[in-house]
Length: 142
Image (cartoon, rainbow, N blue to C red; front, top):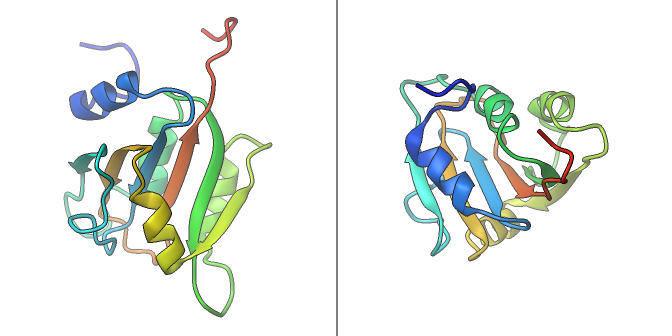
């Protein structure tokens, strides 16, 4: 048994094969995962039931396994910022801002060939989709 928090074998394999610039998509339960997926993305369904697990629960664990250099979110056409964005900011490194994309631009970006992993959650909050760009592991990182 592994001594780290991330233990899902498919997710571990996809992240281990990824490199700098590869992208990881964590989606809410409404995301069209079966039809909006990149050619190189491993698709993992974690949506156990409505609301479980949440995108932020998955993000919290994924961040223990990879460095992140960028994050992108899907934004509504109008109205206030989705409340979950503040939770994303609280979990991500302080120097990582959220790049906003409209729905169809986000779908296009999230289905490009550099997306190596797509994790579907049971998240019920809307606009809870997060696209992470993997950063560089520095020589001193343990």
